Amino acid sequence: MLRGELVAAPAGNTLQYNGTAPGPLVKLREGDRVRLEFRNDLDADSSLHLHGLPLAPAVDAPLTHLAPGTTSTQEFDVPEGVAGTYWYHPHAHGDVERQLLAGLAGPIVVTGATDELLKACDDRLLMFTRAGSEISVNGVVRPVLTPTSGRTRLRLLNATAGDHLLVGVLRDGNRTPLHLVATDGGFVAEPVELTEILLAPGERAEVLVDTTAAGRLELTALSYSVYGNGGETSTGFRLAALDVPQGLAAVALPERLREVEALDEAKAVRRRRIAFGGDGVEHFTLDGKTFDHHRVDLEARLGTLEIWEVVNEHTTDHPFHLHSYSFQVLALDGRPEPLRAWRDTVNVPPGSTVTIAVPFRGEAGRTVYHCHIASHEDLGMMGVLEVSA
Ligand code: C2O
Ligand code: CU
Ligand code: CU
Image 1: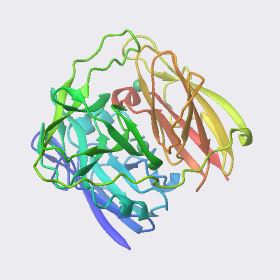
Image 2: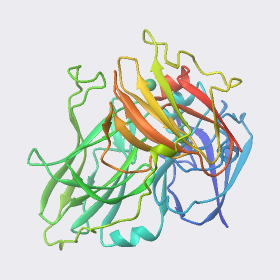
Image 3: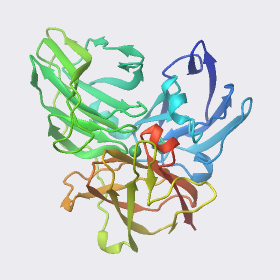
Image 4: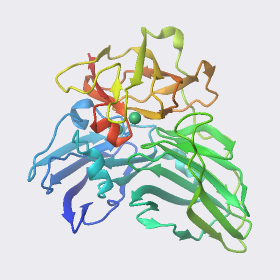
């Protein structure tokens, strides 16, 4: 059994896990039995949520708030097939944004057999958080990294409270090709070439970058609009640099990574529509309602597959996040999604519909789904899902 403890406590005007912000890296392996203790030494309610790990609702306990001075214990087996990049953060409804911005977030890396295929790559985790007006990377603003291999694996983790990051890698101002190898729920079937990847708040992606040619690569947040096509865009800025030294030998791309199961839409027992909405700046709803932890909004049965159409009837992007049950994206605005991948968070642009397939596997219980922009979640853009056995 792997044992660990995380303690959330104030430090100056920040909040930290085990005395650091971001919190320490939690390293797990598929199949590990884990016992994780959490102590809340803050002066406010908090909790520890392991974002993206498909844990039983009773272990995740997203509706439980821990009072100052209290502890919780999460004991679980790391499921097979989930090797990838995850993170932990507080889930005390109404106070999530403040606690995240103050420093409470940390990375989780789960390893498994598929990682062997990438063992020649330099493996780097880049966790993005917001520090005032800047985005920091592992707690440092615009760090410079020196790759040690001709191919670098970047584990990109958007742990900001509400920043969409459209990430690209530039050389002399031009985009270089990236190979996507993993999304939120771990590896995809084979590397997919792209030149940019959108990470909504909460999302992760892993990409490989060729680092054989010496020189500087700029990891960049490209200009992006959360208001949809034609809306006001943010200006791009640099996140980090890779200073590639001379003489790194080429590392071949693996052809295949793993099997990603295809979900058969015809077997779905139900189709539902879930709508993000709201009016004005302070009013954010799901299906016209704001969060009430006493109310069950959706009921489903363990062992069934459902198709959810997540519709954005609001004016800005909202990232949809579901706890405990990983899903696959089937379509965006009716256009089939070419990438088959497990995820726990997906961005829904304004006016768009993202169709997802959700197989209810593992354990029954009561959990939540919400927008992963922390201020929206705090203001009630969250619902309760009850999965019965
Ligand atoms: Cu990362 Cu319910 O959240
Ligand atoms: Cu989560
Ligand atoms: Cu939102």
